[in-house]
Length: 60
Image (cartoon, rainbow, N blue to C red; front, side, top):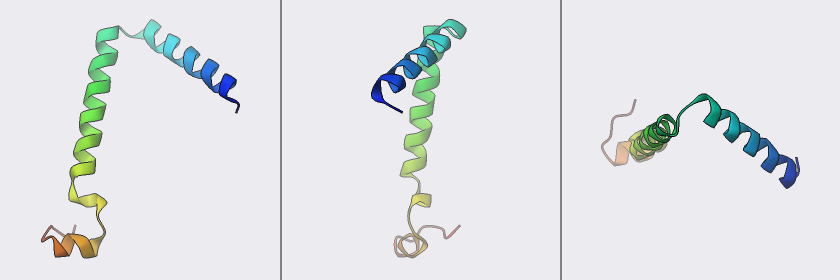
């Protein structure tokens, strides 16, 4: 996919999203998604099991 096709595809997707939902709903959903992603990245599950053991985190 070229940059131009990607840009047009993204533009079409954003236009469709804006036509289906209000700006407020889009912003709230984006903030929640970022918060959940950050929370998941800060959890110990991203570390290998040996590092979790060394840090005294649960091995689950």
